[in-house]
Image (cartoon, rainbow, N blue to C red; front, side, top):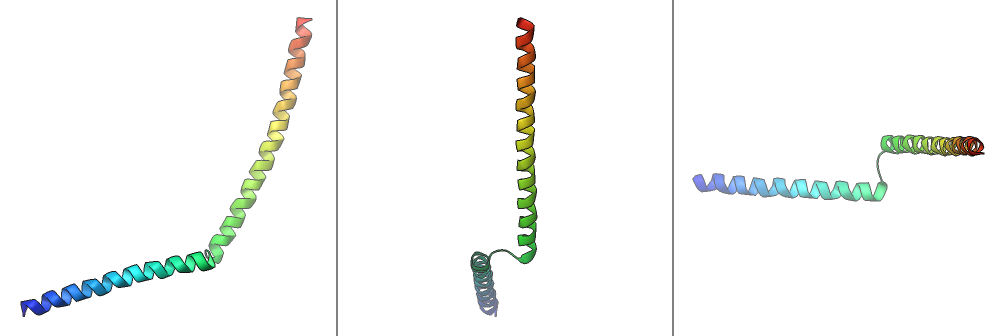
Length: 81
């Protein structure tokens, strides 16, 4: 009787392990084939737009800093002469 339980537990463990590995493999294939869900795509689009807005803002800020540097350098040069 003890041997039957051991065989049942071992067989159940093997079936469970194969199910988990197979399910993981199928999910990975699905993600690679179809990509992520619609919600995730929408979030990615929003993130891309936010990053683009940040980039444009940083470009504007860089131009402003360059203008301020130019103004400060001109003032410094005027003081020397």
